[in-house]
Length: 313
Length: 313
Image 1 (cartoon, rainbow over the protein chains, first blue to last red):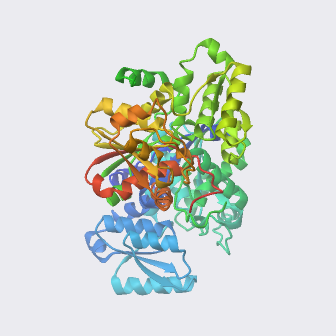
Image 2 (image 1 turned 90 degrees about the horizontal axis):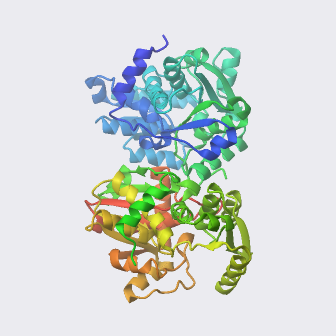
Image 3 (image 1 turned 120 degrees about the vertical axis):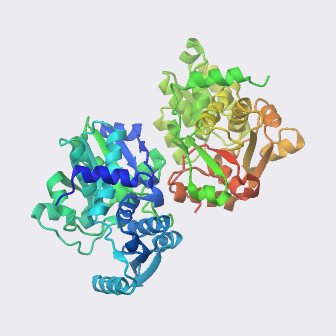
């Protein structure tokens, strides 16, 4: 059931002509703060500004010609919506994006700019599923899940796989966890490269369903998440949870103030734009820095799509 | 009088162990907007966040052991103050920075963090010169000018020299112009690589003394500059003006609203932090984009030191 090493390697071959092999950056000030060697995989520089493009394109590339002709559909108000829209346009098909009517303007504009067709619905789970089903039936579009889908997880895994080549012999890799697609993919890639590599998830206290899921051994719903890390408000799924259970050592939770401070720190010291969800992983590193001392650390900076009119500092 | 190609190459050899060979980034959205191939030299990723480190370290490396033992002094409220402080600390000497008492908090903290000794004075030319002279006499420190100094100009030239190696066969290179040290250095390096390369300066309308200087053939003072591009409020000097006169084809002036828009555009599309002075060069490119169509363009992104509490958007 759990994807194999071979599948990860095949995903890498499949997506690499379509994605940016994003740079790995270092920062002497952050190294000094943690007393470690930190390697930041900059998925904020990925196409459409987030790792999500990897999963979207990997999924699309495995559809049949006939499926592609009918298009794809997803429900997402975040980066996966933009990613699928751009990937669909690039591969000559179309994407229908089901979004709650209260979605933020910037995310909506990104999807429009990348050519996605937006369908809005009431911001409830029921309305979302009903709307999605109706559009699937009328168009024959293939449903793709933003995080709980094997092809998406495998696409996401390629970011960490690249990282392990760009920065060799890492001891530990951190990634934020929301829907679980990035953390599961990261865990797969890193474990297959080196079984001793430690994989750690990072999550806001205000949306700690993944932490609770690991603790209870059962997927916990994300109920009323309260965090600025808008990419991390969703919950794990049956495809990614077993991977996370098997390969992730722990999940570090961080406060909202730590997320904002970590985001600002990266902006100021590294001169790169990361979104709050990415800052969660940096915040986790800083919060538990004793644990990371003297180690070779990888951090997946998941994306850089920020509304500059609504900064947390 | 004008520095030779040999001097530029020697400067490159001298500084390269001490600086970052900063990356050159591309952006498909900006390429599309201008219909050109744009190569951004990211000096915002330079040590202390700006190209100024190049000039500072090049100057320091040419001082005698005895001079170094007495330290260096400059008057600057901007990036050169931070650059000289860090370079001095790195090379085991000390820097005295004369700053106007109304200097902004972020710039002051940067200088302190890099170990510079700050001396404040009234924000007038007279007070500044008097204070500087007094400290030179009492300490024997060597005075270094932030922009109008041969060694500093040659150090600055290394950014463009690297750019011409990272992005070959450029048709035109743009750099912002304030005190003139970066534009002069850029002009030297590019012209010596290819005499047909066009060098263009970019300047705010609210501080267009360099434009007026080129037009009148005589250095014009920067009187009451009004621009958010705080690095560009100073005026040209007798060392850099002849170089600019000889090698720079023209200076494009831009409005404040264009600077803010260009800065935001780079932040949003390229996910990198640039300061307003850097955005001036991007704004110039966008303002006169007809002129740049189909060309291979280099842009020096001069720095990324921004006060996040005081953004122009």
